[in-house]
Image (tube, rainbow, N blue to C red):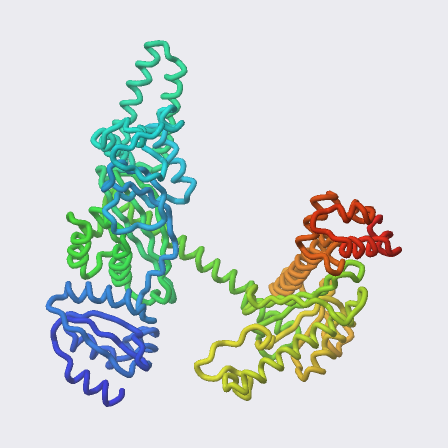
Length: 636
């Protein structure tokens, strides 16, 4: 502990407030305390009682700041705001990259519509959801359009508008406010019915449809009665998919949390109008060593400070210590009372257990996915290093492939994988310049020499600018090398021993010695330099899967570019090769003669008859197409 920390700890007050732990000027943790002196001092004493993460944080702390507050509630609110502002490394951070769909009704408008949105805003509109996927939302919208004739268009409605009603009005699916067919008061009644329906109150809608169906059947309008019956079924099916639970028709969010030694997972189950409408899982990285009550407290503060409207009741697997303070904060945000409770028995307790079960399942799936991804990426790199005898694990692997058609339009592709993942921004194409015909050996030599020469030039330039150190690493403050300046840790050549030999010779000529191997496609054999026998990996080996993915990606990338070049060459007109005939004259000629063949067969008189083509140009065109080789070429 340095002198500055000792001085600041000695001068700490005993009042409530927030503290900001720092390392080299960067805020790495934000916390709150009822008694700042007691709480902050604990970090620097009895370190054996701290978790591994807290001990690691304390070792980095070289300074801290405090912000005094009058009450613990103020400190709690300030802590949440500071965490959102600074995103400290050691705090629990809610990384909500999911944007589930909601239905939005802007009740501030005279003629609002129901629209699908991905974010909840603080704009006084009514939001319903979240729904689990856009398909579910569209099913709800289809039901709504069949029941409530609200407008679906996005046009701006102005007072006194009297447009011609659209087809939706004729079909009974819109009240046509654009045509003055409905007053704002009448429209508002329908909007209120929609809000009730989306809130889970479907009994009134079903009763009204039942009456309409019976009336239509009584009047022998059987087709209309059948349509109403189908609407009733759609409503019932929609409500049945929202699992009914006996919570007295209230609105609740049920929160449960599970944790391993590293991360935590919070599950939020949404209940609206007595119906379970969905659930979401949120991973909290690095929070696995904290108490569940503490995790939930931090989560709740961040979760409902993102424009989300808190429900009237939060049911938690464990009651946070500051539950009363959380209730006050959420009540202020909602405008009406919000209760934070920990149910001990009954239906609500079963809901919490259900959320807990889902949280455990989500965490297990996430860990399995991370493990699988690690096996396919960095784990595969480690396995590949062992298979080919590398002492270090390769981070950047480059793969090379040659593509041509009978030696024509020969190109090479360079693809890059970093930590086992494709890095498309690092991909490059090479058009073969010095090799004629289909010669993969010489082509690999040319490409590798050009690539390594370019790397040497760019690295020398960076070194001269002081951006690259003599050991090849970026200077302090400089970004990681990219493009040709970034040298690979390992190179994959699509081919056998000969392709590998030519590529290595080019690399050595440029002054580099980087591990390189060839991969033959027939048996997926790995060829290493100076080794006669090839290596055959297990077909299920992550290392084999990785290098096959890189080889196939190089093949795909090269073929795609090669195909574009062939198409471009095939579309080129022989007119473009005639000197003095520019784009405008080519267009005039094609407009007049309709085809290049007709131009080639035209007489001098016919060419002179074209507007914009004088005798001099006509002679150039005529002479070009009547040279023996060009006539043969065009007729072919």
